[in-house]
Image 1 (cartoon, rainbow, N blue to C red):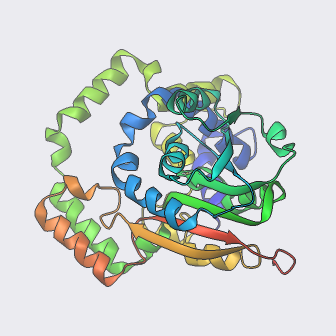
Image 2: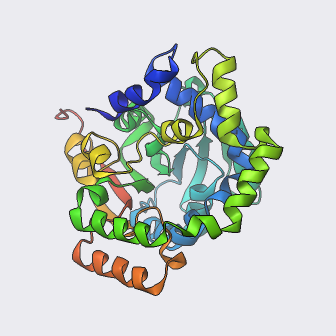
Length: 333
């Protein structure tokens, strides 16, 4: 079963009125419009875990082009994290121009505020057709925490190839890896950790504060606002639950071995096979060896367990970053 078919089965009870791919894209647009101002605060792991990784990716992956300045496409730019990382780490000043694209105008507004001090000319785009009409090719493609929102991630990346130079580099950050959930030892350790922590949610003040905020101001909750928007626009006949909203927005994020084996999540080994003849994997790093939990927030016992998993299975962290080099496309399957 593919990830799209799996999502279709989850959405079926709510009687979708549009194809699954269209509904998932719409839900992402609704959700991120409402989350834009809160995104960075809700995702501290991006800044805390990825700053050093992105600096390394820029150092080893950004091409040296003495003959011309690099043109960069930040696809799915969000709040501007990866753009800021690239521009801040490019000490040699190789980047001469950047285009930041995102489906959400609200995210673009935050991205513009994030990057307002940069000296590099930046064009902000929300129209996909306008993006495809760019007259000059891009030397570098950057994405971060993007692919897992897409119903067909590799098809989307392939659709961008006409915009890229023949030797373009793709820096891809922070995606969920299905390899973690397919690794029996990783899954067993996570399950043991969750059993030890199962009562913690009842004594965590933040959980109660968040629930109270949803009661007092439902429109402030991105999931609630997304559910209402989908119903009001006739995309579904029955109001979507908060859980289904989150699963649809993060449509490529697995939650169990069963989901990973049915196609949810990304595997850089499988991606390398599927992209053969188009992109070559030249570097990768995996992390998050306790699944959805930030290791710094865990008791020492579980931090040590995560380190042991990392030592034994360095390719099987729950998240990964990668650098890809574009290759010849005529032999692509």
